[in-house]
Image (cartoon, rainbow, N blue to C red):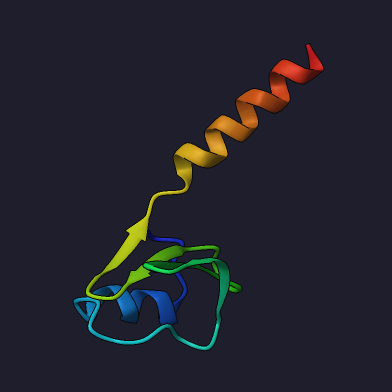
Length: 73
């Protein structure tokens, strides 16, 4: 979390009661939720009708690294 930009840090501290900031790009949109990634720090959030979730992408990055490593072997 120490790699968050100031905009994402403010969003996290705000108890998730605000809208996406202008550095967030939409990654995926479905009827019930939208996923955004920050252009500055790569932090990801899921916005639903009632909640905002901070997504942990370290698992995703580890899996990508593992699959890349397997492909090279």
